[in-house]
Length: 102
Image (tube, rainbow, N blue to C red; front, side):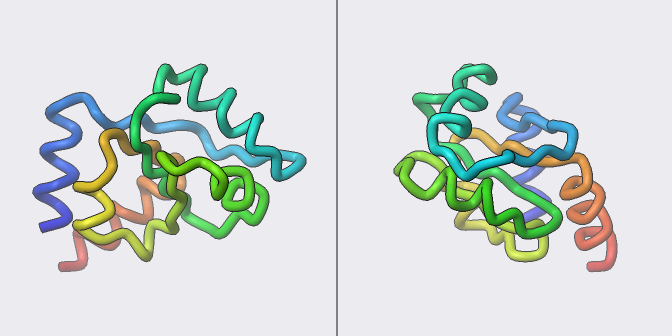
């Protein structure tokens, strides 16, 4: 189901892949600036990371429309609930590896 959901999102152009990044400080305004730069500030987004990042998680928690999860923890509900997926490059590799094993 996850593979189908990811395929659907890709076909719809609702996936953005970014180089791995982090914030120096856990500031919500920095996270919001990133979303505005991607023209996604008004959409429900799911940021998928390969590894936990405390600053990104803390920066996003005050935004109702934003969620951050690890690639190993994604589920179909989270994928469908988000209007747009933002995936780090290392998380994309992890997702591909996880989905190819099944």
